[in-house]
Image (cartoon, rainbow, N blue to C red; front, side):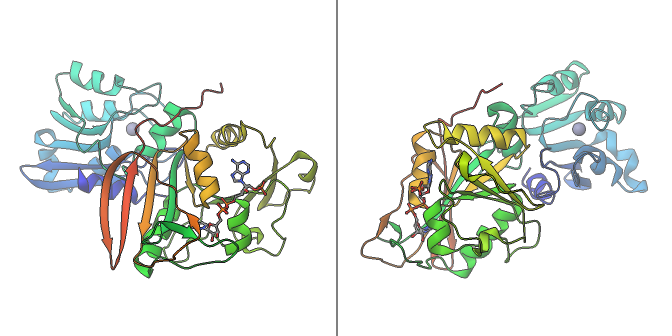
Length: 347
Ligand SMILES: NC(=O)c1ccc[n+]([C@@H]2O[C@H](COP(=O)([O-])OP(=O)(O)OC[C@H]3O[C@@H](n4cnc5c(N)ncnc54)[C@H](OP(=O)(O)O)[C@@H]3O)[C@@H](O)[C@H]2O)c1
Ligand SMILES: [Zn+2]
């Protein structure tokens, strides 16, 4: 299943709003085929996996076990149902990590396979961090993107100094953070971060697509020469209605929203409408706390460094289950999963 996850992630940045999915076919401990969902609207992982089996191994397909990171689909979408392919291929055992929360599937894929006499196991590695099906399942079940809070903190619990940019994390952490950016559809910062750090929010240290940038800028304080507003990648400026009059360009869009108690819900509903399945909230502390107060987050990725600041902006403390702790050449990445993430039910 770990191999399925690795394969699935090769689709990052290419398949949204479809899920990243990986599949391997195993005969007596040997992988005879593997595949992943490579491109939105194109063949699913199971199809690519079975097609990859060499001619001399094809007679083994029906004696093999199919491992797949997400429940096989069972309806005609842009491609035919994968359950049909599995039945036609005479595979007797299927091992699945997560059920597919898409309303047309949600356990029906498993049901179809089981009622045809196939042995099906579900739930393998379901509690893993960065599970490839998280984006899609959150998107369809909660009607909002999967939300990751991401920040770096000093050894004494600060994430910045007022009005001054401080570099914390080492290069390993930055590379990993940029790898994450390449997988997510969108990335958001608050006004102060845009002003203080002048971030580009691109993924310079990892190949792949840069995410849609979003800045919460009620009063349009971020100057037009800010890195964020340059035409390198699509960007939304969320501001008050009276300031959202500029004509949008191909890359810059002014989104008028009321800056009231429902701001985040309304923004997430807008992202849902635009089929954005994943969002990184990259700071600062105030913005992250707004998401935390509403339980509008799924996972926190915290890069802890050895640097001591001795004062400044206190880092938030997201509470949840620790999924992972990773040493990164002096820094530590901790991944925390929220146990009560909120859904949006706007429709
Ligand atoms: N260590 C890290 O990983 C990291 C990451 C990012 C930033 N930082 C640091 O953090 C500092 C900035 O943090 P900060 O807490 O001062 O500011 P921030 O979160 O970047 O920005 C806060 C401002 O954004 C707007 N905003 C955010 N959420 C909102 C909401 N739900 N509703 C309405 N407005 C919202 C408000 O602007 P208005 O008040 O103007 O309306 C608010 O004052 C900087 O020093 C930066 O260097 C550190
Ligand atoms: Zn399928």
